[in-house]
Length: 282
Ligand SMILES: [Zn+2]
Image (cartoon, rainbow, N blue to C red):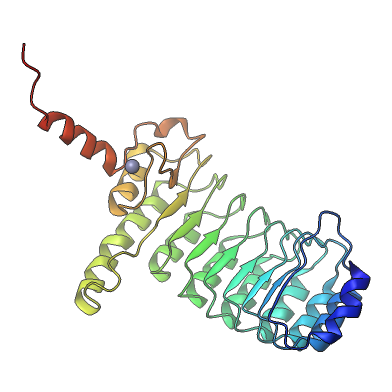
């Protein structure tokens, strides 16, 4: 595959999308350097699981592909935070960034640079980036107000401060993954629930119906073992798109044994429908 990219990239100078997913990692830095040298219009690049690639690739992309909107480097474990921070300073149009498993690259320092430069960011996957802490997530929350999807699954260091900053600043947040973030407590849940109430009011004032459908539609708090039912129920009540019922599993609470009593709006409806039915004749 590496040779194929080396020979083809110079012929596709108008290329906008390039997906280079591999079962076995074959891509090397010289292939990415060739892409960066010839494909300056590239907007969507998938290099996931290319763990042979080093920061040389990120430096090349920073200079050659400043129009990148979507970049998937999940599983590229050799990238460092210096390389990622460098890329963020040049690729400032990024909207979708997948860093899942980039443990070395996704440091608080790199996230600070992303928050400072990539202000249009809408979707960020930081799954299993276990060095990510509150400083990094808060920089994103303050720097990227358009954030819609953030996956922090397995970011074991983060605390309520991260979630509170997101709830207060990222008013378009639709999807939040907190799987295994075991420092998260009820405080974080109440801040999410209250952000909804606050936003609803502001939106009525300014936008009327335009944004009424906004709010969380996916929340994964599986294995957040410190949470209690009233706090999670408050979130569920604030966001009508969150469901715990089978088939519409958008509030994921598996592994939280305490939370079996959290019910989505469907449970109320079912209860009301059942009591509205005429009693069977005796
Ligand atoms: Zn439901």
